[in-house]
Length: 195
Image 1 (cartoon, rainbow, N blue to C red):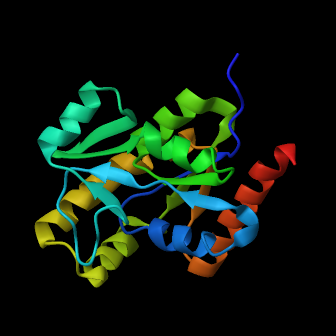
Image 2 (cartoon, rainbow, N blue to C red):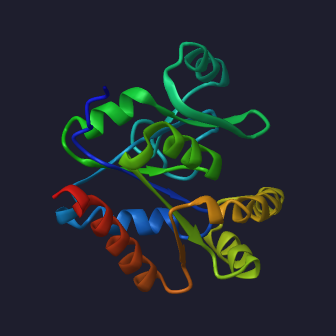
């Protein structure tokens, strides 16, 4: 019989530009939630001011694939050709064994894989953009991606939106403050199950 984890797992997923990272940063300020953040690994290059070990573990594609072969990831996905993202099992253990509730920022397939693996210890929350036009405007406004990358993100967003019904909770981010509040309420409900 598996030993219950000290903390719970909260997975947020959304198309790029939906406000997921902003929501997570607001949630992290709520000390009552006892949140710890899982740092994902990626084979992509850092964007802007991103730093290794803070926003992501930036790995070469060869190192990433070597870790996959060694079963060091609980989930991973080649999100774009040659660009992989994944969660190291050591990261999950590090956070939940400290008694914190783990917040994970994952793509839709990774989120559903974590739910499949950890079951009732996980809540999956999908952050939905109001519509694709608003999503496009947000991606352009943040000015971190080329036009081609934005087009790829929008194409991917359509596929990602089709996964939303498989999540435990779907929250539409048409107002950031409201979306943060709704997400916070869902997390409080989830972690208080055994309190």
